[in-house]
Image (cartoon, rainbow, N blue to C red; front, side, top):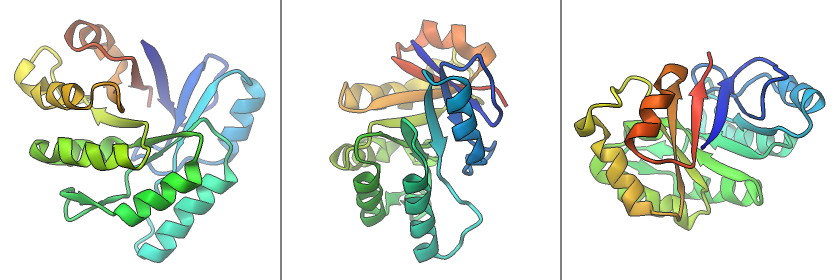
Length: 191
């Protein structure tokens, strides 16, 4: 299982790193180029959210310019949800997909706030817009509680190999995750 480290600091130990602030706001962009210099072989992902921007037009442009300004392996975004996590802004989703092109386009852990009965429908929208993964936040879930994991298992079965479901966990949850549902990749919160 590929393990991506969620962090907001530099390290020589990273093979796969997701730079983000703790609230999944965009990180200090200087970290990206410095990490590339430290570990040129590492896969680097970054969150592009700007939770402080309230104007929709400015937010869209901020997200686009953040993508254009950074050369990373993948971008994570949460700010595509509308109607209290019941829908997505498909125009923005399509625009971001066109900007990201050949990099990984990943929906952030805000997806976990989507009501479980909408998971499959929104996953289909993401697949149609070339999203490569969905981060699913499990940090506050007991991984031995099958009932708590049921929405995630149903989502994983629905999407099969068409899109990656990427659990976000604490380091101490890794062994329990390996015993529950098989995943190809996970994000480990080091913050």
